[in-house]
Structures are given as structure tokens and as C-alpha cells.
Length: 330
Image (tube, rainbow, N blue to C red):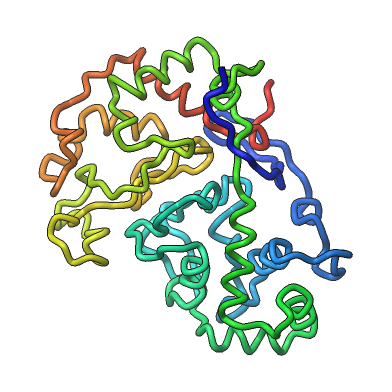
């Protein structure tokens, strides 16, 4: 019996090795599906958004693009705890994946954006990211004959802040994945999960209590939770509280989706965990690492008591959430 189906569009296949997964590589020109020097026969808002996503024209010194931090080979996340913006400036939060975000109710770790369109514009003006006023970004696009023509073709108007956001958001909505061992297992299809991964799924749902926060087809409930990493001194990012000013939100962060999680290390809003095993060890007994965490979720009130086999099985299940475009069986 089929349990759910998630429609997806496949754009990418890359070559790198991470978390024990082998990735196939294609050239950038193939990845993008077209050359920046030649307009495709039919331009859509998704294709326009793709061009903008990879073009450094939207940064102050034209040195970085959205893709500089949202690296396609790593499920559109970054490989560093904090990404470098213009002039080498470091951000203060780990870059989350830009994949599987079309159904999200909130964007950014603190949930300050309520739509992909709003999220798309944030990094452009952020002083530690692209550091470019939106007004200047629109001037640049209008000075570009290529972009003026493309925007007129797609939107029947010259580039504006609204159409810029629309195009990038449209592209991000194409970055959905559903070709994983877990998806095949859920749909009773061949090449699903191994016995170990199925055991890990049971641990994920019950003993490890992951399902309390990571549910839905994308493995997130779009909630805000504190896992106890904030203690007011060592970790000074109070998360959701910065938006709501509600003391109950101190230390809470948006629960991320787990699709392709094996590709997106390091983990947590501060990139403090380098591997999935470190994440699992922390959740097993968070008090050992951060005994004075503020607003720690009640789900983590006591150690989980995971055995070594439990942890290995749980990690195996998390690997089963990786889309086929990133993997190649040995």
C-alpha cells in the first residue's frame, strides 16, 4: 500500500564524497541546463531564477552568489559552520539547505521570513552576506541588457524587487527531492531500505523520539524548539526570541527538514556538530554536553538510553533520506 508520493524535479548530479556517500559529477554548464552567454529558447521564471541564483551580480562586489553558500553538491547547504560573505565576512548561523523548502511555513533559523519570496531577498541586503541594497540590485539588473530582456520576456516588465524575489523563489521551489530509499520503501517499490535502515526508522519514530519534531514527508513539523544548545553565555544566539521577543522562545530554532541530511554537515544553527554521529550522541544525552541549556524541550528531559546498535541503525536510516542524485552504489 502506498503511503505518500512527493513530486520532484531533478536538476543536479555532482561529484564529491561526503558522509560515506559517493556523488557523480557533471559540469556546471550541464548543471544549469544552459549557458549564461546564450539565452535558452524558452525562458521561464524558474530558469530566470536559476540564473540569478548562480550569478554574483547580486552581491556588493560581485564576488559571491546565492550558490556560494547554498552549494548544490551538498544539497544546497554549506560545508562550513559559518559561510563567508563579501570581503570574507563570516555569518553567525549555519547555512541551511535550500532544498525541499517549498512547503515551509517559516524560513531562516528564527523563522523571520514567512515566504520564499521574502527569504530570497534577505541575504542580498544582509551586511555579512551579499551586502547590496535592493535598490542597487534592481539598478544593476536594469543596466544589464540580458536581464532586462529576460525579465520583460517572463514578467512583461523591467526588473523590480517583486519580480526578483518571484524568480529566485520559483527556482527554489524546483529543488524538491523524493527519490530516496525511504521513499521507495514507503511506496512499496524496489530498492528501498535495508533491514538495518528499517530498524533505524523504528528507533527514529519511538525510542529516539525524533518523530516528535521531525515528521511530515520532509521530516519537519515547521515548529520552533530548543534542544538546549543556548545557555546565555557559551551560545549567545537566542533564536526565535529575536523575532517574537517572547521569553518562552529563548533558544528556540526552526526544526529543519531531514531530507538529504547526510549531505548537509556541519549541523545545528551554529554548525557545532561535524557528523551525524555527533548529532545522535548529543540527542542521546544532551545534558552531558550542555547541562545548563535554557528552555530545553521536554522531549529531551531525560537521556534516551540508546545502545551502540541503536545509534548505528538510526544513522543508517538517516542515510536512507538521501536522494539518488547524490548517491551511487559501489
